[in-house]
Amino acid sequence: MNSKRSMWKLLLGVAGVGLLVTNCTLKTDDGCTPGKKKSGCDCPGNAVGYQTCQDDGTYDACECPPISNAGGSNVGGESNGGASNGGTASGGATNAGEGGAASAGEGGATSSAGEGGEGGEVIAPIVDPNDCYDCLNKFCTLEWDACAAEDEKNPQSPGDYCLSSKLDNSGQIEKIINCIEAERDKGLAKRDVVRACGSSLGESSDPSFFEWPPPRMTAATEGLMNCMADAPDEVDLPGRWADSTNIPASGSPKPWLDMTCAKLSCTSAH
Image: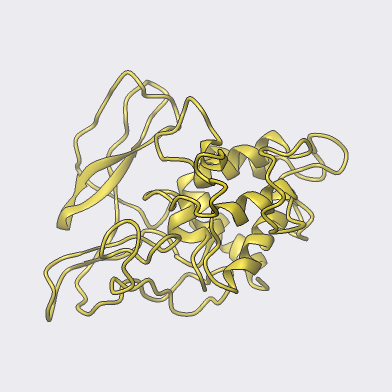
C-alpha cells in the first residue's frame, strides 16, 4: 500500500499503454452505449478481447492482451510497480479457478495458454494483477476520470469526494480500496467483503454492512465501484454485482465475472 502514491504518478504517464490494438472487426449492435465495454472479440492465440462503444454508436477495434512467447505455467512478468508489492506479478495458469484452467481464480488476472510444453504460447495479463488502480484506469476510463475530477477542491458535498488530489487516502475510493487491500492480505476478497468495504466507505469489511450504495457515497465513487465489479456489458442496472441474489444469505457469493477489474486485479490474494 505504501507504493500507491508512486504508482499513481506512474499511471498518469502510462494510462492506456499496455493494451495491444489488433485488426479485429468493428462491431455494432442496438445496445452500443458510449463507454460500454463488450467482451467476446477474437484475438491471436485464441484469446478473447473486448471492444468499447464510441460516441458515434459503433464499437472500437478489439483490445487484445499482448502476447509473449514464454513457456512454463506462470503468466505475467515484471510488474509496473504494483500497488502492494511492486515485484514480480504472478497469476499462474496452474491456479485454476472460475474463468477457466488458465485463470488465477476469482480475483486473479485472467490469461489464456496455448499448447503446453516447451515454448508454448502464453497470453500475458493485460493489467497488473496486483494493481487495482492500474486496471480501473485502463478498463474504467470514463468512471476513473470522473472520480479523479471529484477531489477535496471539487467535492460532491463538504468532505465527500472520490479521490484526493494529494493522494492522502482521504478520498472515498482510496478508503474503500485500502479496506479491500487489507482483506487481500489475508486471502481472497469476495463480493460480500467488497460490498461491506464500499457500504462502510472503507471503515469495515464486516458483511453486516450491506447497503448499496450507502447514502454518503458520491456518484463518482459509486460509478467507479460498479464499473469495477459489474458484468462488462451491464448498462441497465449498474450495481447488480452487489444485489442480494449475487451475495445470497447462504454466505456463498457468486464468483467475479471475466473481464472485470474485480477479477483481474482488485480482489485476489496477494
